[in-house]
Image 1 (cartoon, rainbow over the protein chains, first blue to last red):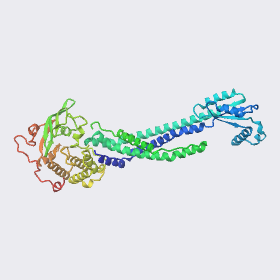
Image 2: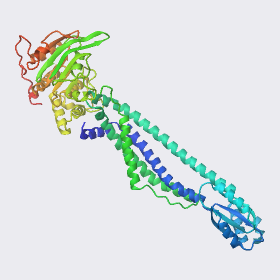
Image 3: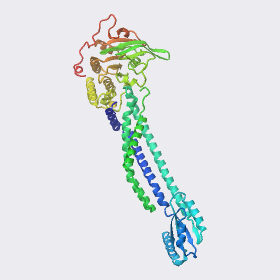
Image 4: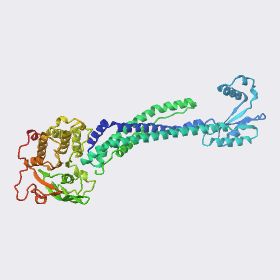
Length: 294
Length: 258
């Protein structure tokens, strides 16, 4: 069968047996959507993690006897894993306490009686972003406790642990969504293959009877499936390009973390469509039963 | 063009074809007549390279196709137009008559435009051109049979093997099929037609067909093929050479057809 005939047969298949091809296109739309979103998420997640891990700090409360805070600050800055050190005086500490109380709806009256000098001065020791924040925060807390002039240390263990838990949950949700997407894709692909096989069996029998080779028998379905796959993947990728920025924007607003997200480039889109064409062609081959006598 | 040489087929030790030997030359029409169970359909399937014999050789255009590899068989089959006996003419029910006919030409590598013209010509020859764009599933049994015959004959195939082609057809349709077969023979096709229908066999014989009889898997009537080949196909020893052209003129529309 020549290419001209194969294209004609592929068109006839689109016209007469749209169900299997629609199922295939839907499966590839899902693949495009999930695959594209995964790619974007893969690229964006390190930035999100870095953002989330920023400003993780240990608080070192200063004793009243400390006068040369600058020297202590310099000493702390030299510690490995320390990114920045900043002094929080009594007034700032009280201000933060009042803001925090207001955020949880606490009565301002309860804090009104606190005098500015009541709260101790402290140094916020910021950790450099990276893996194993909880361990590093605990280690730093231990070191700080031994330094002269430090009256107490808040290792922020609870906060760091909470951050770690949230990030683990986010990863689990992302993997779960990807797994569900893959399961749905496989189900849709299996349905497309099954529907295609049923419909194409009779055509394969007839073509074999007429003396067509197995490759010729599979060719029209291969072309039609590749076209359906590319069309479906294009729809899925377009949907992804529209939806992902919206979702990222919502996350950014919810988390209050500025993250810039770049969509897929032309090369990535082209590679995705090419992969869809190849995979679609393979599905077309698989969904065309060739009679044993062919 | 087709030569069956000592063909034997068995089932459960019972011979279905027993040393069947025949030859059909180009521009010749051979009718193999026989009763039920004589082995006509099997003979036709073997001649069309759709079934391999247990013993013997099948030669198509002097090429032994018996021992061909499976991958080579499609290239042989596409040049042998084969119409198996009803009810399985392997038409695609959800496609039109035209598309079904054109499919055979597609397999043979015809261009779309010429395939379309050939299909229309053959449908007109068989007087079913008004059914060209109808979905096959909506056609009557007789119309389906005519479409199947049109598919077999379209595009001037060099070898044609028909098994009970007119079993479900009335007199007018039979005349149309006869005209189409005569026209195919005139283009040089080697035609083998198996039938249990005595009157159809007689009709073909009166139109220049050489008649053979198949009985219990053995060809018992007509000339043995080996005596006919290589160049005297259609000549039985001691018998006059039959005129390969039709004895009665084909209908006008036939001559104006292919």
